[in-house]
Amino acid sequence: MVELWICPPGQSPMKLGQDRPIISIGRDGSNDLVLDDPSLSRNHARLLVVQAGAFLEDLGSRNGSRINGDPITAVRAVAAGDELQFGRLSLRLEAERPRLPHESGPSISFLMDVDKLRASSPDLQVPGDPLQFREALDLVHALSLDMLSDASSEAMLGNLLTRVYDWLKPDRGAVLLRQAGGPMIQVASRSRRHGQDFQVELSRTMLEAAVERREALLINNPILDSKYAQAESLIASGAISIMTVPLEHEGEVVGIIYFDAGLRRGEFTGEDLRLLAVVGHMAAAKIRTTRLLDELARKRDLELAVAAAEQATRAKSEFLARMSHELRTPLNAIIGYSEMLQEDALEAGQATAVADLERITGAGRHLLALVNDILDLSKVEAGKMELCLESFPVEPLVGDLMAMIRPLAARNRNALELDCAADAGAMVTDITKVRQVLLNLLGNACKFTSDGTVGLTVSRQALAGGDWLAFEVRDTGIGLTPEQIAKLFENFTQAESSTNRRFGGTGLGLAVGRLLARLMGGDVEVASEFGRGSRFTLRLPAEFGAENPA
Image (spheres, rainbow, N blue to C red):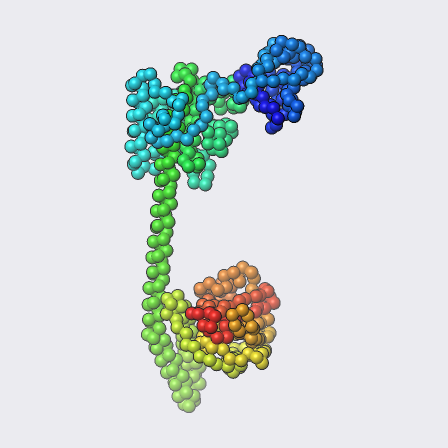
């Protein structure tokens, strides 16, 4: 399909082609090409392109349309080089986009080395004044030294703005910095007309060019360019020349440099824009390097903090694990002596003393259970917990557990149910730890259930890798909400504070139980409905180490 360019006075060139097959022309604002000339009709003519070629159609205008001086009455073919006349205006069709006098060359990738920059930019000429060229080199050199310092990105950009501002002598200048993952923030500004500071307002077109397309812009006489003529900030500034350069390095835009100038200073040149692009590239590389080093430093500090915390946790756990004997021995002695004194008091008929000694024994057992939970947790965390493997039948184990838990169930008037599959058979693991986990699950079920049912179901399941035993503890108690289940296995955590006040406990039993289950190659799972009861399932390999090495 044919492609032609039309360049109206004071406006950007427009392309007629596949992307825009019709260009309507006239004084009315609804046209694609609006020409404010009284000799034109509101809807004067239109250019259109089809597979057969390009054509001009007059829409019954009062002053007519002409092609190369010949009037047309309907539709006429047009081609590159044709002179089109609409009323008193003449426009020329071009095969390629014409370059306007105020437009700079295409955006290029600038290098920090000035010699390479000049070699890669044929349009960049050495100024006729050797002193001016020396000053430009001195500017780049001074900025390079500034960027070797440890100053912050904001301070570095402020210094860059001051140096370039003093060299270019514009009316106003500003630097914007993109915060990590955030918006552009102005960090420095200079102005001759409004004191030292002002707030730059970039149009959407300028921002898109700088940030999305990574283009450096040089706009002379912006009020004559349709893309910028309606920008209130530009009209208010009175600028006749504007430069914006993205601070871009390896495809990432981290900021924008902005300068504008009025009649007193005159228009910026393409060489000004290229020099600004050089220093912008240098600044962007410095900012990205600084941010990368800061991020590495933060990661290093975080890693050191995590390592220190892990070391402290290991030290704490190792200390508590070593203190196991020292903590348990005196408590066992207190419990043992209180039980002996209870027997003596019973024989002597001292009922009051017996009640007091029972409270001492109960308190001692409660404290011993708390110490055991803390020590077990610390041993697992410190990697000091060892398994004592042995083969044992499952049915006698669960029978003993139900007998042990029966007094606790009776305290809350709960019925106990046991369903052990005939093929439960035997298992090879640490029987003490299996008993500890199941006692905790059954104890919780009895504690949080009143006038209900607590049951234990045991089944043997053939899964990939071998046989597994499933111990399901169910109750008809208070149940759990999804929010409570989410934090159920955290250390020192109970469902809610009221649970501790009502039922007591340390909040360690389930956390220790899951750790022990995982140590034996299994896990503890939970399913619950608030107000309807809960179901906790301990799953363990029938033979530890066969498919689940420690």
